[in-house]
Image 1 (tube, one colour):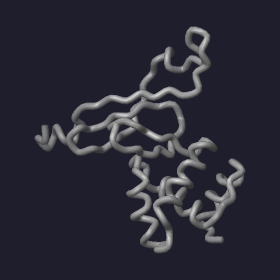
Image 2: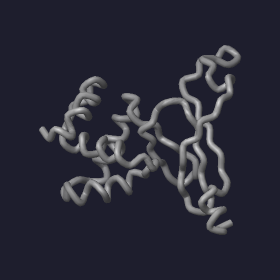
Image 3: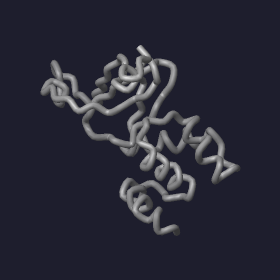
Length: 141
């Protein structure tokens, strides 16, 4: 086993996920590309190293990761699913000009409740849309 993949192998094993080479490569990609990639982008990157991989394998692996709490799917645009390796409590900002999604730290105690009106809360999503500072600075408004 590649020593660079050893820490990722431990992460998978702790979540009771068999650490196959493909799963390790996908997790490695997510760890080193914190850009909220979509499955197709992950597929194109991994395919360079594993030409026999399928897009279905990427989707199946991401679903396993989601079920085990290793990634969060983001449904910000309504036309695609992006994946976030950071599963901690945070929000997202979507730039309507360049399409980049960035993490936002914000505090609102109401979002951290475990229940609302007797309903158990298992997931909270918070996102903002607008024009990012880079696009504003480059006059891409």
